[in-house]
Image 1 (tube, rainbow, N blue to C red):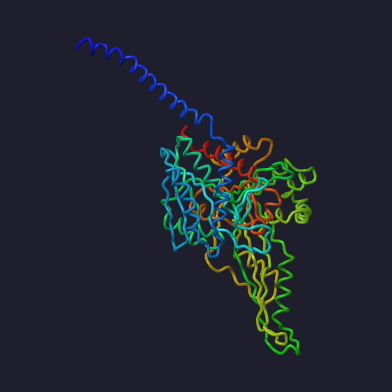
Image 2 (cartoon, rainbow, N blue to C red):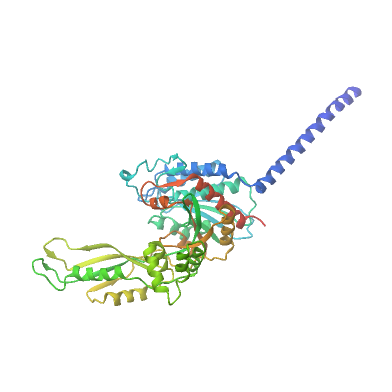
Length: 483
């Protein structure tokens, strides 16, 4: 009996040794693989393809605003997060107007970083599209459909970066939060306003990456990486002319339409004085370094007292975008007056789309308008309602902005990072009002893609989306990983 047991133990010993060695080897392999995940980084080719598929599916979910129906989009994104084992929550102010939040926990040594994009899109004139705007199909290197650029592309890129951080098991010094919000296209009370006012604890952060920038491409070559640090503020006004109504067969000198027309002509021809800030000064200074000698002169002599008038005139003729970045703009957009061809109306009005630079003194601007129009028959009705807040620009020397510059040099070498002041508006304004350093980004786009934003035949380059994911990922890892 003893001999038999000894023999069995002898037979089992090599097997046990083999099992122990195998377990040690497998453990070492797993540890090595885990260690190499962060060292080697993700497969950005696979990430590109996955981001394109996420975007394709996202476009197929109709979230045109109105009515929005963003909860359907939030549920689509939640399904992706669920499959990865990442917890998320949907917040609604009203039924169907959902915002989704997910979080990757860090050590808490630093305050969180927010990655965000909005779920809703503008409406569609389907008859003017050459393909199904909700088809989300991928063909010839592009993802096609409403929201491809604005803003489901940004949301998809941010989600892909979020997934990569999770899969790569990146050790974080700060939480990274993913937010896809409702209502950016005109109904922010159900989106960012709701989240900031009622659920700030879910998205509170030091830094945020949102829509608003662009990686501009011309002839297949990236020209610059634009990062929005501030934006103009919408401060709509109205001109209301008052006169005496009467029969159209008897002309009157106090015709409201005549007074209004004269006032509108003066406003349309007026250029509000130039007002640069840190962002726009840096923008034109850096742009000069990569421009033609002629443009270089223009961009470096904006504040030269002897040259500024002629320089501004040339820029105005050259680029309506650059001209708008130099100053507050006032554009007549809607005129109302009269109800019959043979009746002189007693009142007539014009809506002015005022896009103010962040530090514009609105009462002083109204007074300048009053002096310009110089007609007691024309009343200037100031902005009404709450609107987006006016806030100082996000900094150019912060940890995140400098990380974005380093990422640009890695992913898009040989170009320049340009800080932008948007002439439009985004949800970053509400975050900046809470003290967040918020920066606007955008995927690789040509003039063709830019023209289709809010227009027809919207699309986004797949290869550009892949580079965009890599650009965001490297900046986020730079600023959020444990040091």
